[in-house]
Length: 160
Ligand SMILES: [Zn+2]
Picture 1 (cartoon, protein in one colour):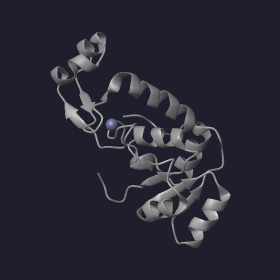
Picture 2 (cartoon, helix red, strand yellow):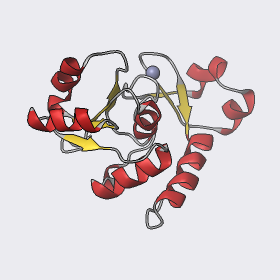
Picture 3 (cartoon, rainbow, N blue to C red):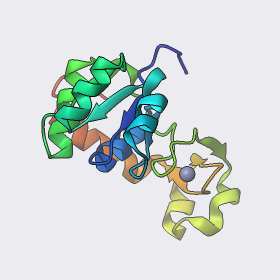
């Protein structure tokens, strides 16, 4: 993974956006319970995404890179963020766990046999697993979700 990739911190109102960013492969942390000083500390090497104008102003004053998220709907949030920061070329689906942001590792079908539906085990050849929580990912349904949604979000983005 390139080091120049954008990394994010989603503030407490942006849990859904955080999961979608992870699904697209972006290193995104989300700790809804922590206080503002901790947020600014963790955000030093990330871009703080916030829905709160005051937090945005204070982050700016402290020299923390921050981005004010305009919309309540995650699709609109994601579309605007992708366009404003030109993130299309950084998309790497299936590289991060949507639950814990951990980089995924390859898994053999036999290793995940007990964790996936039988039809998935029989039809899918390539699996990824999260080393922290054990969640299994495979291209089928997730890929269709990404493809459909992203095509809707950004017309020019094409899946390989
Ligand atoms: Zn996980």
